[in-house]
Length: 125
Image (cartoon, rainbow, N blue to C red; front, side, top):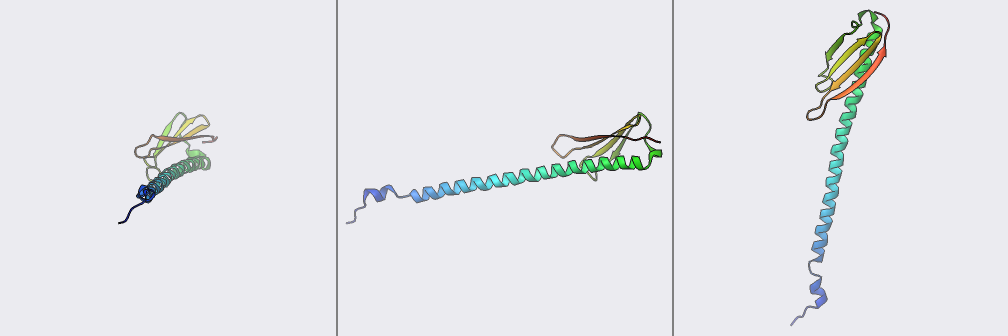
């Protein structure tokens, strides 16, 4: 007859429990890395849109500086669609004397509207 010792029977299944806990910890780590990567991709897209908006606004100011004879009328608000550059994007140029305000707006699906506003003083025209 074989007798099992009390120490051996008390340890049965411990390796399985340890393996399951290790798999659980590893899975949580993988999920955290995937979540971090998703947040990183979203923030990268947001920063690209902000950089594009700044470039578009500076480009519009550059066009007004280079052609002061065709500046918008005083008190006017001119809107240009730029949906091909930014999602639901538009550029608005407002003139008050020699002060021009360029506002670039865009909105990603499911998010709030974003604005980039810059001003410049342009004489002439």
